[in-house]
Image (cartoon, rainbow, N blue to C red):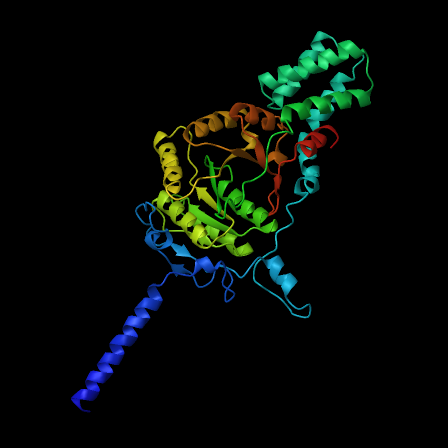
Length: 402
């Protein structure tokens, strides 16, 4: 073969190599929002913080091995509606239960655990002689339910005043008085809605809490709830301390077609959170939900790191929701945790898990008073769709009537 032919072959090889490098290094086209060719969780493509972040933003030290799955074509429900009825469809992910009316459907679980409060109070109030000893028993019942001292005194005063004015009252009137008093304490006027896409950018939700409250599970369930409302959701696995956290969150994402931004264990959680938000922005998604590492509220270093995660995210986007996950069974101890977290980050709402497993439903009222923010979500079971938007009326009815 002549020298000219070898040169020509070499030139062609170089051109093909350059083209291949350009194609490989070109970032995934998240800005096209979704790619019909794959379901989330497959064909994951490495992407660095520099590639994910829009120009002009401060980029923290990149995560070690950031993985972002390609985005699904749309929600499963949209695809089912668009497909011919005769198709045998299997998209490999689930359609979550509707978010609408979830708490009503789960009310029986709540009433089973909290029924002792309502029945106990009504039993005491319906006594023929409401003497001082009986009022002390009513006070003890309310305090045992973790209502807190302040709210307990308020409700007691309302009930005593009504009984003094009206005299002996029947069971129906007592039930009405108790319902009105509890509902006023729960405060149905509070805004319990979750922030969604704002001014064309994704809403950013940061999930925080201590170890053992079910934080990562709650993050996954929250993604399901948002997807059930027709939102597009990205999950950020910024809990890089617990070995199984990223895998656990990946499993939740894969089940409903939500992409997950994750890294290796020990990576900088602030970098992972930054990358997740940047990717959601580039992909024009509705919401980015960031799971953070569980931390003891007494550990100053870990709490400071949580503040750092928020500050780094805010280099490119506001953090719209900071949801504090509390275990309802911890009672008043949960208020101590809540107080410390609120000093580090701007908590906007509370998620109470295991509310179906405790007779201390008064913690809803106590934590709202402590933080000055509403309980927005409650966990009422172990199932994937057992996270519900908190409904004050349903809550009070479950306590009183079961």
